[in-house]
Image (cartoon, rainbow, N blue to C red; front, side, top):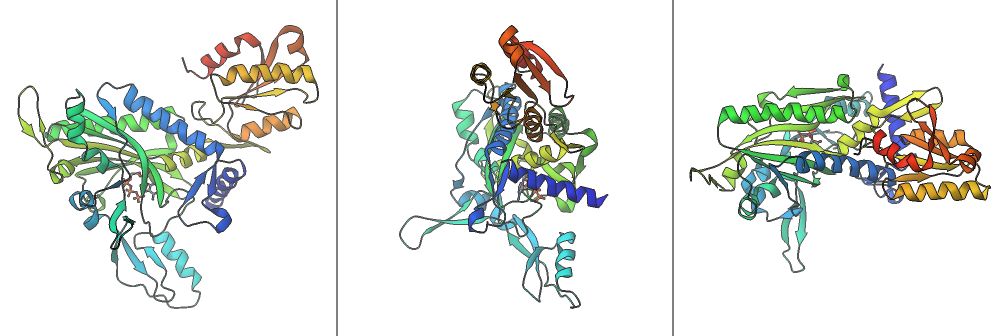
Length: 434
Ligand code: ATP
């Protein structure tokens, strides 16, 4: 069982590199632990995740607005938020080779111990290790020390007053943001799952300071967010909610539940739902005046904090299928990098190529479409299945006679003949973009 699961991870890592989803960062210089680069298809998949999230969290809700805050902020922000003091992981060091690992990561500890066969291993006492990444600004010495944000959240809180002053939004309301965060992780690993640079997609939802109301909103977002992943194809048996134990919660959280995925390396968090109460606004000394009652108070915050990179990895893992020699990424069509591929039956027949090119160009105005004229049709199907393209359109000799093309479905492999001028309608309908 474990063997199959580990194979799956290896297969995904290899497919991701081979087909241009995810590459090791700065690979030609030997890479850099904890950094990954997204290739042409990975960039599309990630962009689709972010766009769909924004559509659902901002555009479809009248109570949410967006923000895009700077990555580097005044270091006072991190002092106030508690991150300089409490944003830590427990670290232990191997006394033989001085390798450091997270004290709570039993698997990594055991793996490390195996590298010192026949030797008695001793670990140092646990130490707290701060995850914030330091940067130095300016040209004159001493340079100003600042931090790359360890979570995107604080950019929302420090702009709370700007947002309430510059929009007409009233409590209860949310502020959404997508952006990069950086953590000096002790043990990055499991491919892109734990990186030192990653993207988060977060909603901070502000409510009146009322425990019952906050609990209601907390429950609402738990359900909503799990449904979101399921609607985009994550299998029910591979996703679950897990409440944090009191000693597991981050320094700001009154209550916390993780959305976890059943990955080849166990159930792992890819989104956290947190009740941050009035911790953050309180620390930044920000309040809200109810426009009707004129009552001033510190709002509470319910947060949904998802990782774009972890979601990308889990969507890839969940979509991976093999049927004999055939590899199919059964990505939801909304997530698939290409929505369709267009082929001329033969690459050396000018009229077939011209007709296929016309179709490619007209559909490309609406959807991201692949073009392939290499090898035979079977190989082209194989290649598109492996990257999750939901449909393949082939222009053949019948196209020249009666203006129809074949459209082949990735999941059923069934083909149907469709009139060229009905293709746009067909895709609007099949991809549910209407
Ligand atoms: P973990 O316990 O795995 O370190 P966390 O509880 O510290 O995660 P949060 O601070 O709640 O994570 O961050 C919210 C989300 O940001 C996570 O659910 C995850 O998707 C993403 N995230 C956090 N750390 C990383 C990382 N090192 N690499 C990739 N994504 C991350």
